[in-house]
Length: 230
Image (cartoon, rainbow, N blue to C red):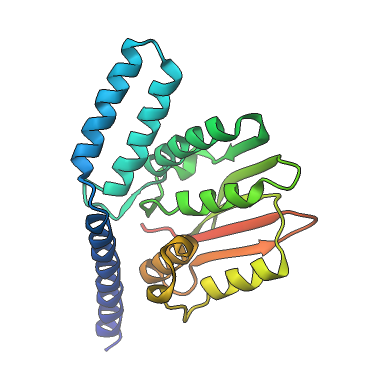
């Protein structure tokens, strides 16, 4: 009975993950953009940029292609090595640092021994994007830091920004990350961090997920807890 209960819970998690994946695919189709056409167009633009000697534009196009490839998930693999996930993160960060320039400082501290850990695909980018958007303070300057560690059977990934949290922000985050939150009723622009939290809880159980807390001063920490699978 204990084994059948475990199998049932595992089946339920896989089923919910598949529903989430299919829902994402449907939303992509509803965008009316052929992803292959988009990638082919980017390749043509990249070729033109290279021919013109515009290295900066070429690198931005390559970074955007990397982010799009991750979103399309051509391999159909829901989990990837942290090393692969970081290729998508670095591509995204390259684009945003070109946008903000010296106004945004990005720090990454991930030990090499964590790079073989499996994580859900595109689990970091929405959280980092949220940190970037809120990390640029009234002064026009901001800092985002990503670090990781292993604590027992869990991989801990933390994203810090110094943009601060208002009481209204905290209430909004509490609602988005609530265990009984219904993602179906939320406007699409607000579901990024809620989606991350839901995916982690579906895949790994209630001990995993996303938390966002206020620290000293204006420091805000988003923490992703991922079960390490052996």
